[in-house]
Amino acid sequence: MKKFKKTKSVRIGQFEYQIGSIYKIPVVICNQPFGGEYTRALTAQVMVDHFKIKALLYPGTSGAHIPPGKMHVGDIVIGTKQVNFTNFYMSPTGKITPDEFSGKSSLRGYQYFYLNKKLEKYTACAARYVSDREALPSWINGKYKIQKPAVYYYGIQGTSTMWLADKSFIKKTDDVFHEVDEDGDWFSATVAKLAKIPFIEVSTISDSVFEFSGSGVPPRGEHRKTASQIAQDISDKIILRVIKTYGYNLLNKKYSYPLRNPYPVSFYRTPMDPRGLIDACQARQRTTS
Image (cartoon, rainbow, N blue to C red; front, side, top):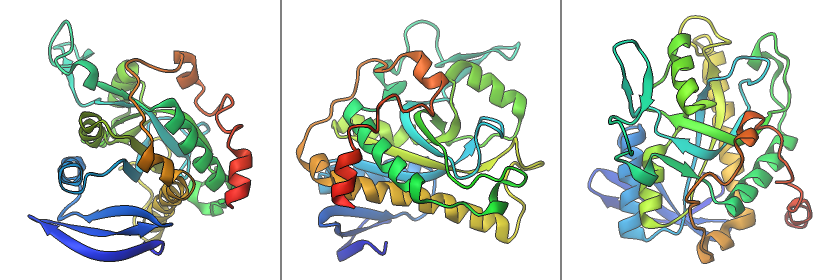
């Protein structure tokens, strides 16, 4: 918000929108009456209909679906693939099958979303830039003394309608949807895809059921509050970097949604390998720093 130059406020129903700019790029920000993925989707639809936005950007925090040693608090996940992992049929034996119905999905091409390859590069460059300059406090990951956030360039994000602390159930959904975290905003992505505008989501890990016993979040008190703030700040910095470096492109160029997975499955199995994603933007980042 320190980078946001407000010009006016607009109230539509129970939603208040702040109009202004960031780095001279026109921006609309919404203060929602309450949180949640459904509210964000309603917010996004108003932005599309009333303000004719050209892109929808969502920085957030998330819970890890990968155990410590591989994923830590502060790690960055780019939503290369969004899955609606709350949309499934569970058989009497406990087996999970995607979608409510057998056969062809009733959601058709909206069960999964894939990030445009060019937008993937934009976000990867921004995430790497921020990660290189971030220093995590030593206490944030307990016995894992991680100082630099890792970037999951090819992240599969679940939908935040469920926050899971049951490890056996996490495994059930992971076996089907292969999500690395549980804060994908599939609902807002649906709004963006229907409107044919880009949707970019970045989530920074703020808690892990594998690392913190009991509820799966850092202990109550200052630690928990501060860990969440640090994670949100990292996501915010990345989206600010996207706006600063690529905002003009987002306003003026077209970015179609891939009809099918643009990357081999092997990319998602080793998501921290950028595979050349950040090579082409090193020079550009130096000139805009």
